[in-house]
Structures are given as structure tokens and as C-alpha cells.
Amino acid sequence: MADQTTSIAPANPASTVILLRPADQGFEVLLLLRAKAIKFAGGAWVFAGGRIDPADGEKAQTSNLDSLPAARVAAARESHEEAGLTLDSAQFLEYSHWTTPVAEKKRFSTWFLLGNVDKDCSVTVDDGEIVEYQWLSPQQAIDKHRAQALHILPPTYLTLLELAEFNSIEEARHAIQGRTPPRFFPNMVFHDKTVSVLYQDDPGYADGDHQAEGKHHRMTMIDNCWRYTKP
Image 1: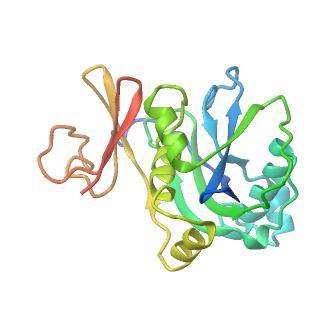
Image 2 (image 1 turned 120 degrees about the vertical axis):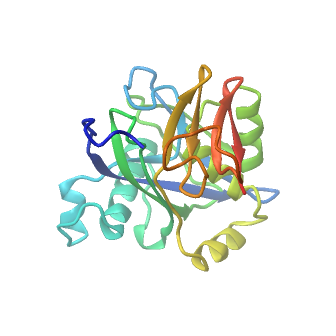
């Protein structure tokens, strides 16, 4: 991890929602393209989401912005602003939580939620922060990323890998409801002209040793796409 004397940027509360819709075979995931000019994740395909605002906390009747109630409200608001969707935040399930590595200058404490919409729902991007959208099955998105046709961040990639294991929205929601949502606080390590993102149970996590022996749990950028290794 970063040296304690190094100035570490605060992790701002944020929320994102993984939206699923039924498909002829299984289901599809909504991915939104962020404008290239945006400093954080510009040009990346993401799930709908953004910072949790004080107004979100007020609507959720909580002063704690970094909380599940505020995250639900923020996710519904961002879905409307970025994709033109009006959603009931009560149906969102807590999927996971990610804290941006301390190596990053812009950091977030992000609640990942899971929601679903009807097959015939209409998406309208704001054409500002978000410039394009597409519905893809999790496996289609993974394949596009591996073909270097879809730029995504590690949390998005890992989420898609997990979702690809389910055959239906109902199966995915049932599995999510039955587990303790995982919390990720990766350690980003730059090495050999590439980068690895180490997770808490990786043997090199504590001291950032990408060569540590043992059962690795990490993402590594190889040939412009992420390669995931798990125990």
C-alpha cells in the first residue's frame, strides 16, 4: 500500500447500478460510454452512476452519504440523468462495494447495486457525460473487451465475469440476495510497463509485491485488456 506519509486523496461516496434486462437467451447488461474529455474514466464503458449528493442523503433521510440508503437514491437519480430511466430504487440489491486504490488521485467509495428493467425500456443518454449506450450479454461484453473493442475498468470487468455465470435475471438476483456483498479495496501496483490490481487475499497485497508467490487474486493489464486471476 502507499506510504503513510504520502498524501492520499479522500474517497468520495458514489453509487452505480448494474441494470439487467431480459433477452431471448438469458439477459443483457446496460453499458454507458463516458465522454473522452471526462478526467475520471473518460472513454470507458461503465454502469450508470456517479457521486452521492447531499440531496440524495436528504431524500434517503440519512446524513451518512456513504450508506446503502443514500446509494440507492443516487443510483436511481443517476440512471435518470444519464440514461433517461425512471426506476424504483427499492428494487436495487447491494451487489458489492469498491474503494478506489490509494494510488489514484481521484478516489471513490462506490456502492455497486443490482437492478433490472423491462425488455422494452427506452434508454436516452444525456449526450454530455454519457455519449452512447449498448445492451450486451455479460459474455458479449467480456469478448468485446478481450478483442480490445470495449474499454472497461477492473470492477466492471470482474462484475461481468461474475454475471456471465448466471442464466437469468432471477438466478442472478437470488444468488446476490443469498450472499454477503464483497468489499474490495485494491492495491494498484505498476510494474514491467503494465499495472496489476491486487485484491485483499492476494499474497502480494500488503506490500505491493507483484512477484509474491502463492494463490494470486488480481487483475493485470496484458495487451490492453484485463486478465483476471483468482485463487
